Image 1 (cartoon, rainbow, N blue to C red):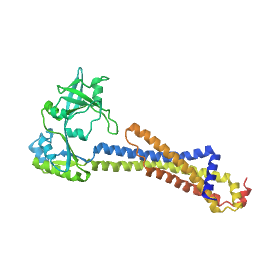
Image 2 (tube, helix red, strand yellow):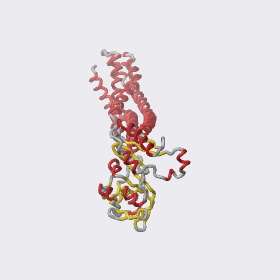
Image 3 (cartoon, rainbow, N blue to C red):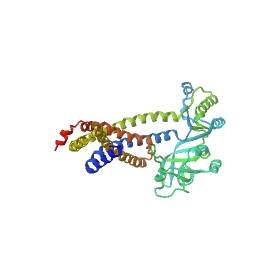
Image 4 (cartoon, rainbow, N blue to C red):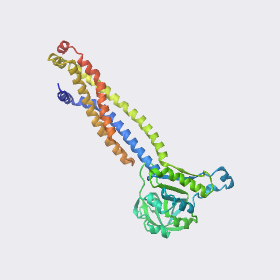
Length: 397
């Protein structure tokens, strides 16, 4: 018999026992689906976590860690902003650096009428806006004129809007930040995703922030390299430049967020592998169910096997027939499991706020693994069928 004829007989056998076939495939469907769900959600979570850590592309964070000598000479060194405007201008002259994103943050009190809240007030430069687009839900974001003129305009977080304005639209209203009037021009979108906790925030143009707090220094600096290849060079040059300007040796350093993200990615890969392996155990449980049903099928069709052998069928042909039937059973279950895993991971990822990464490698792997399960767990029943004695099989009732 040809492969097509064997496949047709396998489908006819499955169709003749619909409920039994569905229940047998259920173990394979759940097993394949569970593995795909775990891998897809794990990869999606890893991608989201990396994007949250690294932010936009080709960026490195600068930080200041004073030496013991600096701390002894100035015990208040940690209370002072580590970056000055002269530092920013000097960093902007480094050829490998595309943007210097600078910001300063202070904790303040914000008040509207009788309601008040403790907020994080951040003054940003225009490069901050170019690198980290503030996603505005109501109103507008900052314009170039807001930065150049130092206008008393602010963008607030969604959580602060809920605290101070309830259901009222805050755009155009004036709040008091550190007892200074600020007109609200925009409200940020409600954050989503893995690290989206939501906080009370007010963003101001840096010149406005400086006028309110009387400080022209920056607490945080992020560098964006012109390209990924220049990232390391830009970081080394920036650290060397700032240490030279401040007469320090290694106090100014850079953090490559991409390297940190890769380390986090390795951890999530290991966790995904462990959990995926546990989910894969259900595939072997499903395979045992397939073997059990195929043994029952061989027993039920003993007389049929005897007739086929009496008509000239070889042991190899009988073995192939039952192997194809077992593989067909697990293959259909595997395909249905892929749809189950794909759909479930998409739904979970939608509500979790990260991408569902179902790759073609995972799909192909699911199909091939299902077929391997069919061969492995179908081999014993098929071998039993092939070894039946034709005469004894014909006598079987």
